Length: 134
Image 1 (cartoon, rainbow, N blue to C red):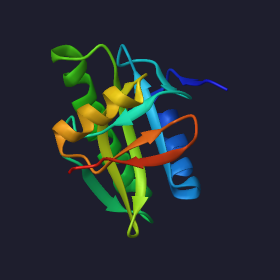
Image 2 (cartoon, helix red, strand yellow):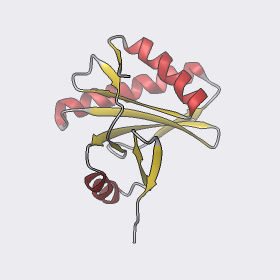
Image 3 (cartoon, rainbow, N blue to C red):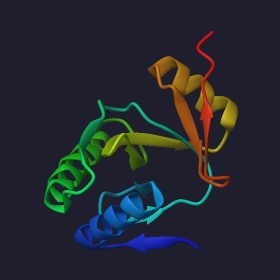
């Protein structure tokens, strides 16, 4: 099922709930206005530095999510045809990252290695795939 949001505030509430309850979320945009939850491809983080907040703080989540949305819009204007805003839970914190979604696992692993990422995420199988740094 492809979930689309035209209202970023609604998307942000959905993402907070999904992240807190299910461990993560990926929301992609091509125009900065419509956000959708992709179902296929390989997520590669590291477009910008990660951010984090404590999981039990919805107000901080909204502020941090807005900060990353603004960064996504800048990225769209400068470099990319699409940007994904990814979140996940780690050590009691929600981590935020700007990401690309690639259709090929091989290409995603190469990009992740170049960026120094420790893993990519397979949206279809909903599993992390660790990058071999040699």
